[in-house]
Image (cartoon, rainbow, N blue to C red):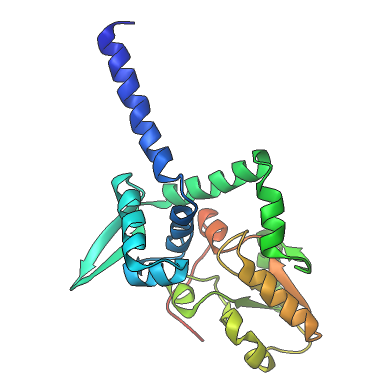
Length: 224
């Protein structure tokens, strides 16, 4: 191989590596997870990820330089979004590969999600059961995430409101809850609460990230 080709190859792989380096931060992955739910301002992302504004901005700039996120300006506010569905696919695949091959993932996941997560339902099962009308689907994410896109027919009850609003749910129905994705603790917390209250709580096996990637129907804006 000529020196020119060797240098070009090295430059190519360095360009690939730059993308890998942008993902080499737990907080940057968490920001991608949040952005998979919809567009957000820097301030909202910082609050949701438990970061100060300066640190959040630095992480987002790194992701932007790697081409993973895009921005728009609205007055003095900067809104971030994923650069495309392929970024969401990459994020989902990274988690899947890490769980399959990284020994530290499973124990960390078990500690984070906790026990008592109850029965899980697949997307196909949910679609079939929703048509029968014998289940209630509850989105337990924050309201703005629900408004950005949710499973058609789902009721919006953020997990922190579930205890006080449980009376809004029919006593004789199975309640299927979902949140951001397969590794989102909100659905686990909701199922534990429902079951402790004597309700039949079931969680969707994954969540809104996987639902979107499967190109299933998504509704937006309605908070009824």
